[in-house]
Length: 310
Image 1: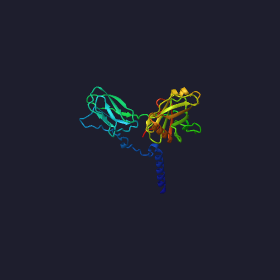
Image 2: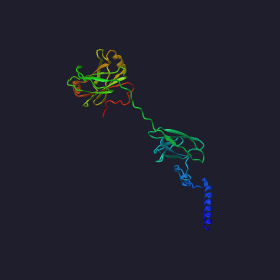
Image 3: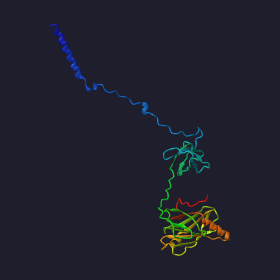
């Protein structure tokens, strides 16, 4: 009998614990701790802009910065104000400023720098107010190279006193041909083919040794079997360089039926005595470079360069 109250007490405690566990809801379950946002992370101040570079009491009328398209500062840029005589030059930060611009009036400022397109901006200044005017310069466009296709120009032969036995030359806008002369006659013959649409031909002959060339001229030029071309003087452009130019009119006049083959004969015409004739003959005995250039626009195409004097 003594054990009965103890058993009843145990049953009662079990019922109480069961009832309490049934009363617990989802709201009473543990939850993950909520971490508050870091106030320093969200309140990080923005980077301050570059401070204008003037002292208190000396505020300019206008200040600003000059950059490229990537917002990189451009030092050494010349900035001018049309109403002021002295320009400003940007420093390492691309900064500039002006004093003394008349207030309540419009002003035009111009930023100029090598390699960049010049930029002009308009601003109106006000009394006791500093204005900021920034420039963004674009690079100058790159020039497109001359890409027109040059038709075939072939030096067929370059020899003296005879036409037969010549070799074919190279192709291209400018053709160099090397000639040897074993004859003492002061006459040279050059054959070549050319497009009739050409605006002109330039033939330059350069000898190995520098001697006066004033006595030389283009004395005879013809299309094969179709008569003589008009005589055209050669231009002496250096101590051993003679330049000959054949015009577009001449090309068109004598092209028909010739197949584009021209033969130019260069002769020496001494004016004073036999000594000059002997000098001319010796001159033609040397090795000579011949440069044939056909051009299609006036003036010569970009990049044309013949023999030059040193």
